[in-house]
Image (tube, rainbow, N blue to C red; front, side, top):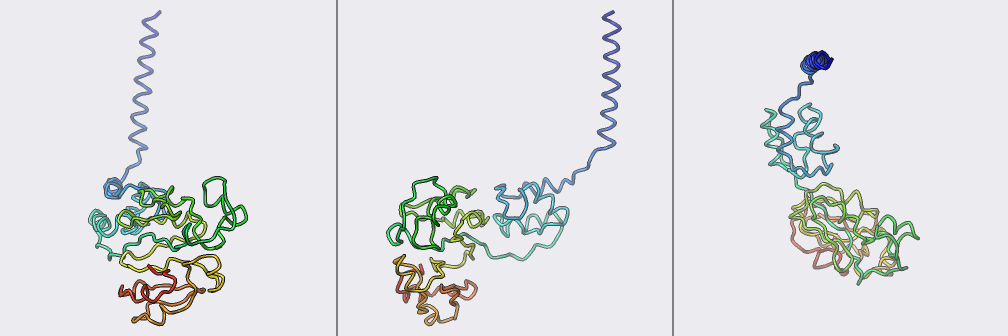
Length: 260
């Protein structure tokens, strides 16, 4: 009785195995080999700066023609050129590299506190309690959300309570900017040397009452810029990196030392 049973099971195994082999060939989904080639060229940070869930999805969208060849922000022009080669397309024009920059200079020594926060070390959580511990409603909360989401460890929290961004490591993914509840991190042109470290929209008197170094909208930087690269926007100076020649005049005339 054992032998017939073994023979029957073996026969059934052969039949079902043959059916599975036939089905795998009949209904196989062909994968474009270029997808794997493009994915291998990417940085692999899965940062989402391209607008997709990760590098694998971005590679699929590129091959399908639905994503730009230069969509990998961390890879920059070099990766875009290699992707274009794989796709047999023209190399896209190089775009300016973007990096994260902190727009706040109000550290624990210069910004006033209105309360003491002793809760979860999270910027968003702190703001739920009376708008946070800072007297300035525009300043950096300083609890390190940006540091925690950075995929390449380009941000560390300084002893003064403000994040320190290493632009040589920054890949421009924008995760820190999106995570910051106060929006005090901007993505700026890497060519820019001088930056206004303030985003307060309050008037000068109010700024002085909460921070020793905030922008007071005195417009001295605007008046003294030799190339008209600075303008006032909502009571705070803004530098146009496309016009700025990095002469440093604005740094010299700023009475608050807000421009660094």
